[in-house]
Amino acid sequence: MPAFSHTSPKQPQKPLQVRAEALPARLYFVVSAVFHYLGPAFAVLLFTRVDLLGVAWIRIASAALIFAAWKRPWRQFGRLRGADMTLVVSLGATLATMNVCFYEAINKLPLGTVAGIEFLGPIAITAAGTRTRRNAIAFVLAVFGIYFLTHLTLSGEPFGYLFAFANCALFALYILLGHRAAAGGGVLGIERLSAAMAVALVVVTPIGISRIGPAVLHPVLLLAGVGVGACSSVIPYVCDQLAMARLSRSSFALLLSLLPATASLVGILVLRQIPRASEIVGICLVMVAVGIHRDDAREAA
Image (cartoon, rainbow, N blue to C red; front, top):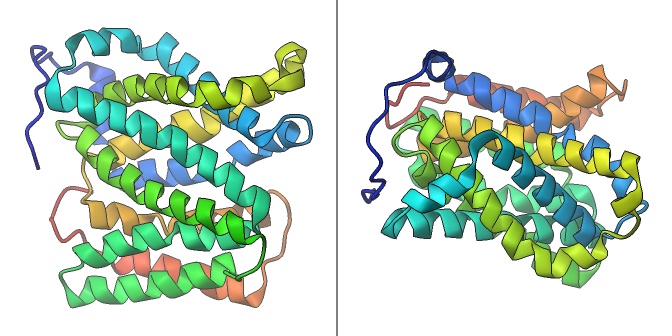
């Protein structure tokens, strides 16, 4: 892993920072997974009134504003040099493009198809990082679990697959860049993430700001947009940084198999949606996979 040129002097850790980094990495991942599926609940209010690209812009813009109020990312840009600047710009461009491709894909394909294709990237990263028989078994179980949960079917508009596979590649790239951003600690990663979200806003604005339509003067839609940004692009990405700082790429990628399982569990507990037998099998396989997996890099988790 290349060294970064972050030149600011090392500051003593604050009590809140110490407590945040003392919590288990898997706990942050669970929080990320839960909020990952609360975001769409707010997005439903937007999809009927706002163009998909407008929703993508509102999501990123609201997240960027939250980070701006919290982390003052412009101070980061004043300190970034060389590899750090390249990393932040690359991560920001990836986040913007990934979100746009995801929304375009689900507009043309069934959500289960998009989700199934999306997880091909993390599966590849997990496979590349598997070094032990135990983790190989966990990998196989996770693959079958995701298959049962996402119900991958090849249907929908052919052009949608272009966006779906682009989203898959960008999701994998997000994992790789996110781990580089987390180098040096999750708190430093959050600082880089805040700057990257500002870059994402710059990237998505030319294609999205003209599509926000009635949301401009509608308080409920604006609040829904803030909810989407906070639940989909702030809390999960912050938790990802705190988890990535202590998990190898392959371990983090395997934990991503919890996302469709979490969606099913939320459906059971909140929406009283009774899962099909295949979904129950998928949840069990994913839980077993996560339970038996061990970080090959022996990082703290």
